[in-house]
Amino acid sequence: MKDKKFTVDTFWLISSQGILIISGFLVNLIIGYQYGATTLGVFNQVLGFYLILSTFISLGINNCLIQKISSSSIEFHPRIFASNLAITTFSTVLFSALILIICFSFPSVFSSMELAKALFIATLSLPFFNWNKNFMAFATGTRNQKLFSNVRSFRWLMIIGFVGSVAFFSSDTIWLYYSFLAAEVGIFLFCVAKYSNLLTFNFTFSDIENNLSFGLKSFFAEAFSILNDKLDLIIIGYLISSTEVGVYSFFIFFAKSLYIFPGILQQNINPLIGKHWVEGTMVELSHSLQNIKNINIVVVFVQAATILVFYKILTDNYKPEFANSLGYLALSIAGIIPFALISWGGSILVMTGKLKENFQRTFLLLVFTVMSTLILAYNFGLRGAVWAVVLNGLFGFLLLFGLVKRETGIWLV
Image (cartoon, rainbow, N blue to C red; front, side, top):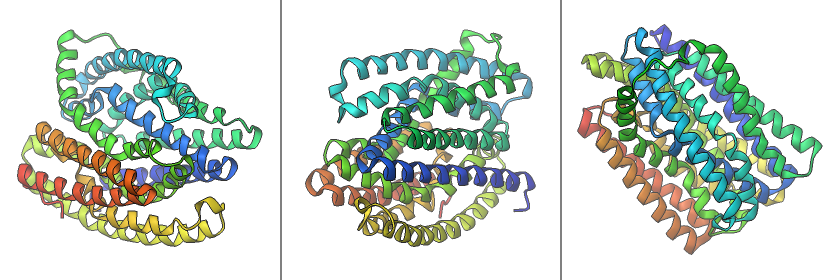
């Protein structure tokens, strides 16, 4: 708290995360109330696909930007950014086109036709989303968390405004998915105007090669992380009813919000970890991390208790489809809490250059997540999907804690 820059940045990140979670809650509330659990399930499945695909398309370039920008002199920033943007442009246009073809020509590969149609529309915004991620990675690398926070807030305010307007004026759910395109185009225009000085062709193929090499080394770990977070919704979409998927996506939104504050801390500490590790100032880093641990423990437990009380009040006065899901939420939270206590350290291995070890961690967790979700959801339906969340949280805790301690000497608890 004595570090004024860190404290102010954390305040901005908390504010934007507050807007994010309120907007996410309102989106779920509006869609669930206006269109029912089935449409809510499809919407959250599309969101899961959207975030997974954007991660695969990015090729790890965002981590490369943060690491290189945070440890380089300012005169090299345009060259670093432009070379990374060139990689993003090629990959995002190519893979977005491929996804559109699959959605249009082979919709049967998805769990429903509604999902295929909705994902086709959402994919139109993927190029803009990935370009915007480059701009936001640059803001993070330069520790401009105020700008990062404001842009993220703007994204979700546009999405909730668009979804609310569609719910008020139209019964056709397909319009909901244009909210992604409207938000990303608006952000893209703002970022181009803000960072026009970074849009240059003053880079070489060796720059692209070096950045792509670093990006790909962290790419799989990043992809596995987002798969661990979002793949459960996609898997259970093939195993349980659409209504149950909608109910699951509703309460799991509240449970996984426990990761939000640790995510804020991770976002803020990443450039500092990279800086201290390169400079060898580990005493200062350890002091900062100890403060983060103490604050995070208090926030996670207070948030968990608040969520349970709020959810009880909400579902007692909401649609009958979502009644009797409080027990599922409580069980999910019990499994998520251990990992939420240390998830702020999820990128320590990346920021300290332990890319191989981070790949191993995320890969093992992904395999465990897929197997547990498939087996338990297939055999026990919705209840099995919840128990998979519990087991995944506990396994993720043990894996992250053990590897970070072994490779860096940093204790996460």
